[in-house]
Length: 167
Image (cartoon, rainbow, N blue to C red; front, top):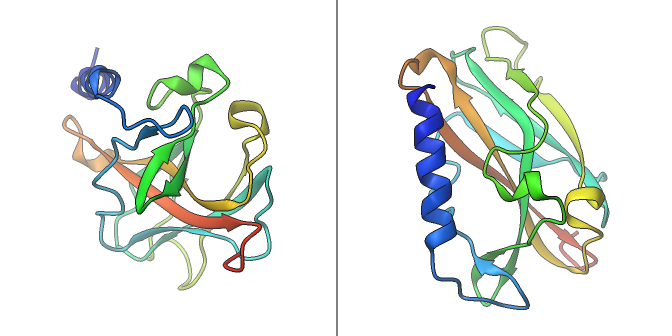
C-alpha cells in the first residue's frame, strides 16, 4: 500500500470524526483548503449548468504535465456563509476519492495551445439526486504525479448556482 493511500485513509477517518454543524442533514464541509495550486483552475462551463449536472473545465497554465483527476466528486451547498456537504445517495461516494476508479490527465500549457482545456461532464443524479435552487460547488481531487512517492492531492472546486439570478 502506498503512503498516499494511508494519507487518504487518515483523512477519511478524520472527516468521519468531525462534529457536524448539521443543516437539513448536511454537515459543514471539511474541505477548507481548496484551489491552492497556482496555475490550475476548475470552472463551471457557462450554459451547461442544470439541476442534474454540468460540464467543468480544467485549465492548466503551469508547465507541469503530470496532473491527473478521476471521476469522484462531491457537491456542497452554500448556506449562512459556509459550505455544507450534500450527503451522497451511493455508499461509494461517501469515501473521499471513492466511486469508479478512472484517471484522466490534465494537459499542461506546454502540451496544448494557450486557452485549450480539458472538459469533464458530471451527472450527479445517481450519487446526489436533483439539486434545488441555490449556490453550490463541485469538489474533486487533482493529483500531482511527479511528486511521487509523496504525491499530493489538491482539492479543486467549481462554484455554480441553480435557479438563481447568478446562474
